[in-house]
Amino acid sequence: MTNLAATAPAASATAPVRSRRARIALRTTAILLAAFFGAASGLPKLFAAPAAVEAFDSIGWGALGMYAIGAVEVAGAIGLVVPVLSGLAPIGLSTLMVGAFFMQVVAFDGENAATPLILLVPLVALAWAHRGRNRELAALLSRRDAARGAGA
Image (cartoon, rainbow, N blue to C red; front, side, top):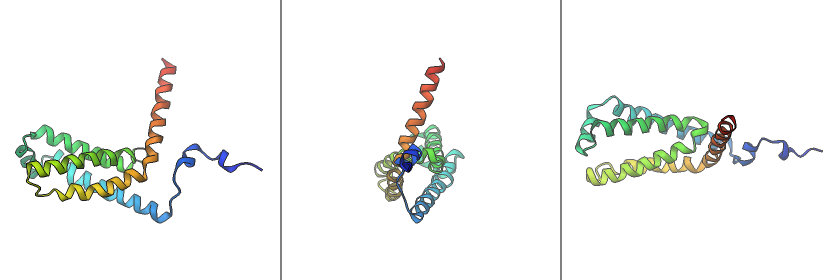
């Protein structure tokens, strides 16, 4: 009699078992957040929408800050839907939302400070749910570094 656990891939041994509904809910949340960060928030900054230009000029960050934040948001949106990055992307976007909250409070008198906090909740849930993906990414990168070192 063979031990099925011993023959299973290592990645599935560390992956949590989730119901189909939970997987669908996590995937839907990731897609909705990706759509928001990519299309509604990041792209207007990358295309220099007048509202974005005005907001970044008012805080003194100018075009460079606007383009940098827009690029981070679009990269985070892509990362939310790429499985190997799905653990790291919500951490990065959560960090961005903490910064956005403080900027809203300091520069805009808290006018829209609730928005980054609202976005932070599902981002933290995704980061927690996909925390195993960070181990997979670290293992993938260490294998690549080991292969690069062996070939040198």
